[in-house]
Amino acid sequence: MTLAEELLWRGFVNQMTFADIADINKPRTFYWGVDPSADSMTIGHLAPAMMIRHFINYGHKPILLVGGATGMIGDPDGKKQERDLKTVDEIAHNKQALAKQYEEIFDGQKFEIVDNYDWFKNINYLDFLRDVGKHASMTQMLDRDFVQSRIGEGGDGISYAEFSYSLIQGYDFLHLFREKGATMQVAGADQWGNSISGVQLIRRLEGSEAHVFTTPLIINKSTGIKFGKSEAGAIWLDPSKTSPYKFYQFWLNVDDETAEDLIKIYTLLDRETVEGLINEHRNAPNQRILQKRLAAEVTNLVHGHARTDGVERVTNVLFGAANFMTLSKDDIDQLAIEVPVVELVPTAQDGQNYGSEMVSHALVKTDNAKSLGDARRLISNGAISINGHKIANDQMLTEQCIIKKGKNSFILVK
Image (cartoon, rainbow, N blue to C red; front, side):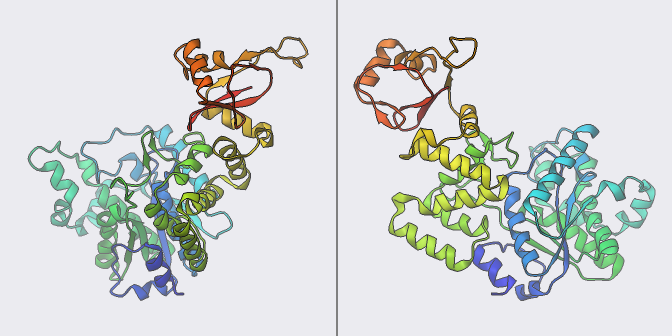
């Protein structure tokens, strides 16, 4: 399979400047950039990152850019209002965090990390206007959809700084063409206009050909909205923003149709394996084979095997038939972040003996029951289980366990 065939099969092909997609098969130096608007990427960023893994596998050389300069302005595309500017300290912190995530996602691959602040910090404003701005078409910049929406009737307007963002990004491509031999920029579909600015500058100033290749924005087919969002907000790669457990659960809960697309986009599994999983899943959709493999593969990539094994054990205890005693101390500590906790207080100074707690009291303390009477009714109605076993009567808790109410409410007793 060629790179072009791989990209087509996986669903990575959107707009491109190549006349024939087969031209992508010839290895070249390319770049991809992320602005430090936050100190973590989301799974929206992870889609083009996965595409880049395939470019690397087929012999292309990647340059990964952290936008220290562009991050000081902020990309206005898709924004209805002016962005709030980040402080210099925020940008420095975010750049460092993004560079670390590059290293984690592309671990074991050959790549170079660059920061566009390094070549912008000493540029003279008048020189930039004369040498670069002179060759940028104002008409084309004004025709951009986001500019029209800002300056048209009912728009909030746009500052000169944000209007100039496209030119700044275009210069990145020109600089990397000159200094690193980059002849292609890869990006998400929403960056097409900004990326074309660089192609035009390279053609006008260098008389050379350069290209843009974009991947579609991932859309959740069940909701029709941009993928990577949940009711709680964005799904981050940083475990302090989206815990490995919540990250794993996000993938585990995608609908069947979306899962068939995502297994191609977000994993490195080969075509034979993927198509085999899809067929297995279609034959027994209730077993969620596709979602389980997808969740494991992506969590492995982002958080590593140890954390993935841990969240799988926790998930099997909460939603499967696994024994609570299979959880390690680290697993229990992770679980304590995700569900309400009732702590048994030590009754001796050595901390070896603990007090007790009635199940009904634990339900009330964690707002899983309105009153003790309500809690006892839940118990007698068979709605409460301990470590996977339903109980019919209120009882004393004297050791670590999981209380489950219904299908999705849990209490950790520590």
